[in-house]
Image (cartoon, rainbow, N blue to C red; front, side, top):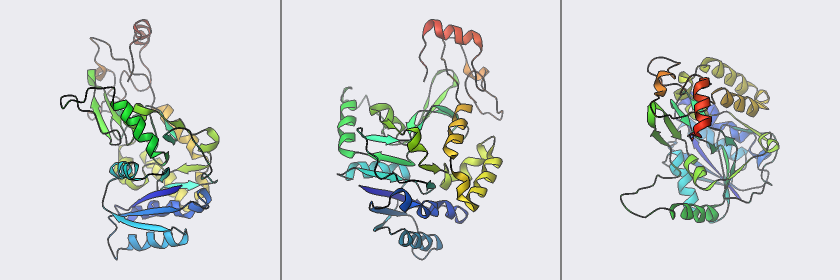
Length: 300
């Protein structure tokens, strides 16, 4: 099975997060072939040279140039590859081998629950994270075809691109966001990693876009300091996946859309026009919980 890595470096100060995975790549994948895609890394640039050196040190067997964005790259691979493959982010640290893992579904990855994302200012929907995603393209194509086949194929009923990010407005000021392959997961499902599998690697989330994300997070400065410490000593990251799940728990709360209710009146906890989690920072008022239980109102 081949491993595919998209290497992007938007800013020189983020180069370390583009190179990180190569330090432990052969811990995670001792023998599997690896293709690294150099994404807009200009000839002669310091970033390109650094990635090429890291590829050589990690015994990467194939390097290609591309000009793309992550979600389009994932869709391209799923449409072009005939054999099962893995995609892997550059901001990963492997503690154990993962190449022997086997799954019986088209998608397998680290499960991310629904949570309020301060960066997107939306309720991010569940998905299997693309930081390390095992993909069976033939099964995926069959299952996606079956999903789309439930609906009339009319120009007036367009579906979304199941690979692409998508922001959707709901009623009462609530907005939801499907990150890369989230809609695909909702359409066809997949296998979440076990606790033992999650412990085999850690992920410094949004590493290559941290300059965009961190300023929007309540604990952004502390996260930046923690990240700097990890980059100075990567062993500090071991077990960080548990803290990541705790973070999602902190920003998880039910949304109940009720006729006549306006979520914006309860959710403006950050100020500055931020909508915040609907009906309060983490919890619904008791009267809404009771009403929802009585009506079995669905949540997004």
